[in-house]
Length: 61
Image 1: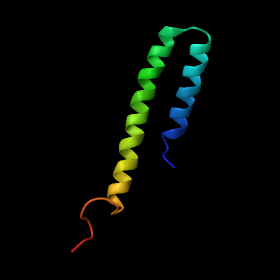
Image 2: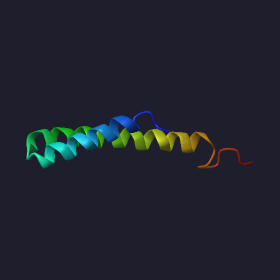
Image 3: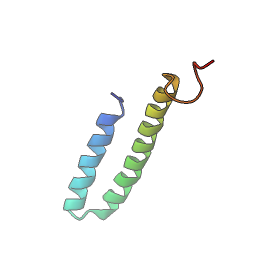
């Protein structure tokens, strides 16, 4: 499991709470942080996928 995932889930919960209370300035800030967290999480899982030999010609002769 990606260690960033709990942080991303916490940001998502905070974003939902801010949206429900119509605090759109905080929503905007949290949405930016959430995007960055998801991008980092995606690239981290892609690196794991590639380094495990599931992608590209790694390990082929």
